[in-house]
Image 1 (spheres, rainbow, N blue to C red):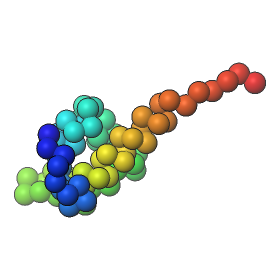
Image 2 (cartoon, rainbow, N blue to C red):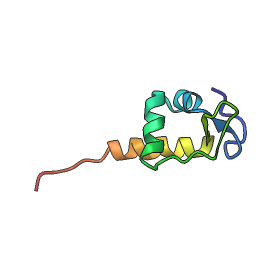
Image 3 (cartoon, one colour):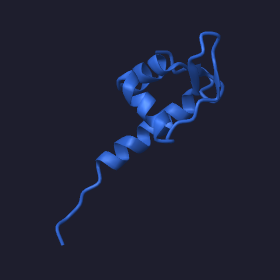
Image 4 (cartoon, rainbow, N blue to C red):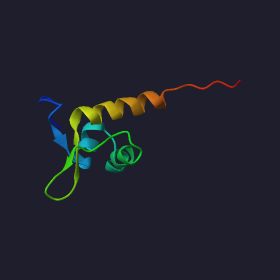
Length: 73
């Protein structure tokens, strides 16, 4: 996946976003379902398209949430 372009204007399908973020396409769809990632439009085939920068932010937030440590009170 080429990340050298303008990530604010680059649009990815769920499959492309998953490849770039190192997750499965279902994870990207879950981000969409849970409101963590909003599609900007749909392609000719009707697939949602996501801004690359939004995908990267969603992936980063997910990884940060996974690193939280909870202690017993």
